[in-house]
Image (cartoon, rainbow, N blue to C red):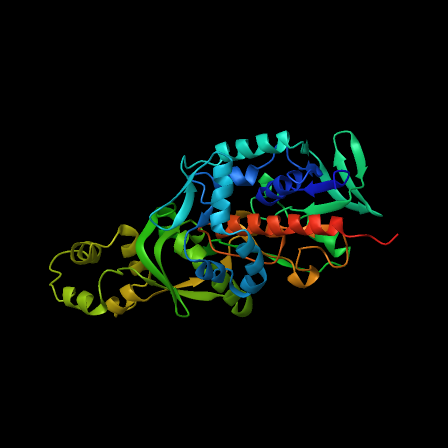
Length: 400
């Protein structure tokens, strides 16, 4: 096994995790990254606190992956949130469970964990090749372009961990899609996930409220309700409550051209309680001041109501405000992506069926999940599964 050469393409969470697993087995690992440094998207995920995973029970956790849960289940069972926390502790970074159940490093930062991991990889003789752009294959050789020109590499096995197509300036731009399609690998179209959505605001609303939150609010779509915060932008809405519903909303827009989201602008009051407060005389108060006085509504919520001023059922409007979403925000502005290499294209060890010795992990695969630690967990878990699959495949006798 010591003589086997491994190529990992992509220096994000999945690629780095796989490099750790493989190099600990004494394999010779070379990691290729198109940017000048590794872990850029990992560091971006840590801005404001690195949400590594979630502490909820494993059955509920796995259900977060929707129709891809069954396929991801073995990988997450084998490298669970608890395993991830132990791995972090081995690197000297203890974790804690926040009040929401999300798991963070104790120092709340990504950089110490990344530094510790890179130091361990270097100690395990992982070789880093930065500023290497992967251009596909020439025969059985991997082809890279760097400042010196074109180089060919012939590893014993390859792991592709190139990410999706969000945060393109950090390195994951989906350029691998065409390369793999040329190799007859089935790739579902990449789409924005955990994203905002376009809304046709009035000019007054668009100019006044960008960057302001709408909270507390409950967002509802086809029976699914999420209470949280919505951020207003000049082009639409984003934020936690929107991200949690983004896959459902996106698919509705794909099918029908738009989606209608319903907002409860006063989730702490019943419709009956609101109607009772409306019995208080308005007197000389403007409608805006009346809303603020009797319901303590924020200026953003009041202005939303003014956007529908032709409605006379204000009580119902406050509890069921219809917001028409016209399109997801562009994929480069999304937190993550849906689509990717289909699970029908890989075996149980994440090896491409029609390219033996080539494995895939992370966001390249066709799955999506909400924010809350589920994204990173699946990247790490699929990387571990793929790395173990590579080790198993390399130990198998090959026909000459």
